[in-house]
Length: 476
Ligand SMILES: Cc1cc2nc3c(=O)[nH]c(=O)nc-3n(C[C@H](O)[C@H](O)[C@H](O)COP(=O)(O)OP(=O)(O)OC[C@H]3O[C@@H](n4cnc5c(N)ncnc54)[C@H](O)[C@@H]3O)c2cc1C
Ligand code: SF4
Image 1: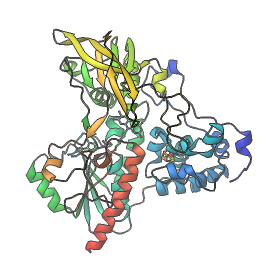
Image 2 (image 1 turned 45 degrees about the horizontal axis):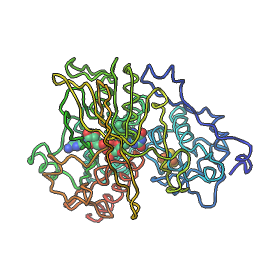
Image 3 (image 1 turned 90 degrees about the horizontal axis):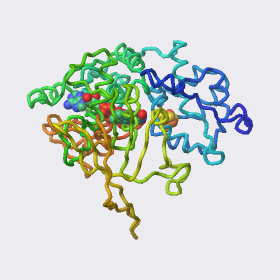
Image 4 (image 1 turned 135 degrees about the horizontal axis):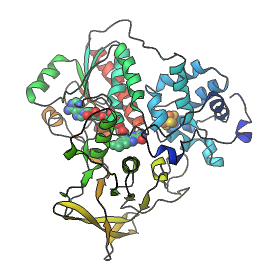
């Protein structure tokens, strides 16, 4: 800890965002990155606590106090070395992680002003790239063992990276046309520019990982059997691809889409793909309703605004969360409180405790949505029960995006043909070693525990890789 009193004299200052009036007309990243001096100042606020709850809260076990200290001392290369030991892709987590660490910072508890861990993480990795510290390091020797990683999201990429470093030969199979999973086709460019993914992929390729796109594994039984025969181990990292649907009257109307239909298409358009006019989903001049109050919904809000929507409303069935603090989720836990994203700030009406009764259309096209207020009551057992109020409301809307989460991995094809056991939540069941019920098949990421976060997916991919490495070593 370089400056023991900095936390008393230097205020928390975030890297901040581009002004709303500028950013809402383009898809460039909205968040700024610290310059060296800003990062140095903010790093000095870290108190190097005896028990660092930031470290405890981070699924990767990032050693924040250690790299904050190195940044404070101007040792950027050492800060980067420490960071990349536990985090394969700080350029992703530094941009999109909800910063679980900061919620556990002691300065969050005492002053509601935690150290800017995530912003510093982004600044360290960007500095490392610009100074040339990040170099391809292919393994010196190869073990002769071959591993197939199925799915190229953060879990698959982290698993592949770790196994490749151990000298195993790794092929990553991806059903889509580009590598990256939800980083590539889910998360909008305004949160994560896709050049950031390409920059990392170029390194991973140089290090020897092969990426095979446009290849849905499990397309048929024969293809799957031949893949299983070809590899010494397989890691299934296919994400949680089945979206939660809303089975109400009018669901089939034109104008009602799943969130990812919009987000994937917009990401593809930015990547230069041409979309047939009859398939184009555009919010330009439309009244948009986003159903689901979470992050995916918020990404739909930001996308619709950039497409030129006339108005955007986001509704949520759950009650409005408390503002500021929530006694139910005390420090150092992640607080269940009202979150306002950069997209919300760009112009969106938000409403809570509203259920969707039906979609109303004319000639097969969506025109209105009937919603009903929900009365939530807490039972004696502490469980919340919901009751629809009788007085429903009609909203005039042209487009609806369903952003109510994801239920489990897609079963059709791969999961079905593999015959892996599922857990109680219908994800791929794994043991403590991330091993599935099928010989030599492991699973990682959202597919193994349900829809989560990028940081958790990277952590899970790393854990699966360590287990696969042990498995392969035992087989020698
Ligand atoms: C819109 C949206 C925004 C999000 N924003 C954030 C955020 O800001 N911060 C955050 O931390 N998290 C965010 N998340 C969550 C985060 O993206 C996921 O938790 C994370 O990407 C999961 O990683 P994964 O590797 O397990 O799966 P995924 O990223 O889903 O990747 C799985 C990959 O497997 C491929 N695949 C599936 N089946 C097959 C098959 N049979 N053969 C070959 N390939 C296959 C898929 O095409 C996909 O590319 C967001 C999620 C969504 C949907
Ligand atoms: S990965 Fe997320 S939780 Fe971990 S240190 Fe970075 S911002 Fe914090």
